[in-house]
Length: 295
Image 1: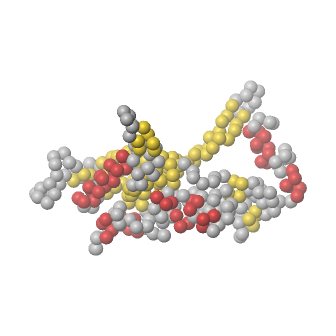
Image 2: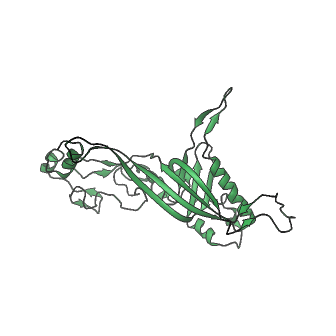
Image 3: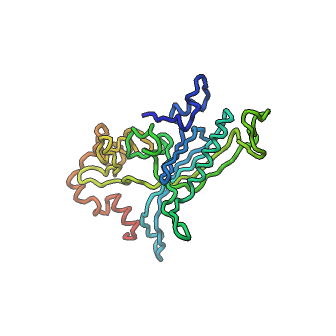
């Protein structure tokens, strides 16, 4: 479902105004931030310079005398998105709007305070929802979330900071030549082009991981029941909504065959079920035992 961007990009409604950036919006290439405490939204046309999505697993390792490998216990997997994009102005009005968006975005990094008698106390942290097409969205909302706004379908998390870099080589708008239509104050500048960058740490708001089945191969635990799917099938696809990803039909799930057409894992034999997780010959049990220092 396409979103309404007219408030964020007023130039979209101008008849006869066509540029490359306008088509970015029509294609859904929009960087959208939603500030949870205030309910404010700020969006930019997706002129991306770089985008990286890092998944890092954290293990608690302890070295023990006499063992070649440390005893390791899994703690969790974190996701961090780094993004850099250009913000370009085609008119004086758009240059001012871009600066207004930047100022609003920077102010969102500060907490919300409750007024007290002699001092203020923090009552809300600066949490965000962040959305960029299917690259950054709440996969639990299903495929309909791809075209939605950050407020309803964005990833929840916090931003470590923004970097604001005006490009002086591209030019600075300092007011009309005659100073009659829109006089500027001395020292009032608006960059024709600027670069923004941010690092967003995701706080997962839906189930993550694999659920072990009694008869089938483990299934992905993403909750997509709101879209009519069953928990475990994950046809919406985490994290990028690619249809059919991490369904049980993939080969290589514990070396067992599966029915990829239906997305259900092939049933294991009674012998396999009886010994899995206890037989040292089972690959999964062997690796787990090694990590826990049992071998």
